[in-house]
Image 1: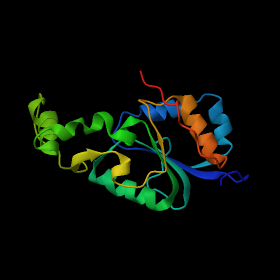
Image 2 (image 1 turned 120 degrees about the horizontal axis):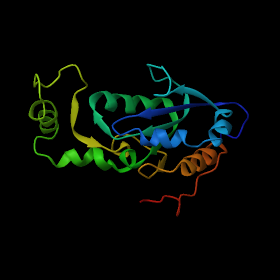
Image 3 (image 1 turned 60 degrees about the vertical axis):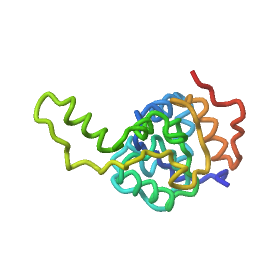
Length: 181
């Protein structure tokens, strides 16, 4: 599908997570040079784009969906992306981000703990940040995901393998590829 010579429009997105998956993406070392020759980076926290573009071929999304801004963004990403890849355990399963879901008064409890109970000065909940969702969710609970790259974070080699296979028009064989610990 993407085996032709044109550069593909490629995006990376960081939602609620630690950015470890983006660090693994960058850890591809010299393989990232080969990848860069095949992609046109259209959107990423690694650049200054403010609006997610239309007609993106492949988007890699790290992190769970934790607030209304991210919920709107993931819907827009799905609408404008041919192939959406959930990268890392937060995007795939919710992982650490969804631990807050077990708290009574979910979002309210998180905000109270972070901004009132642990504040040393001027305890108040900010009103200029995106509204937290009551429950954080992995990507596939909100939108259709085409491929999953598990790991916390996934290895640079696994990321490169999946991207290389997809760009060659092949379906990556993930059996035995994800390693934990």
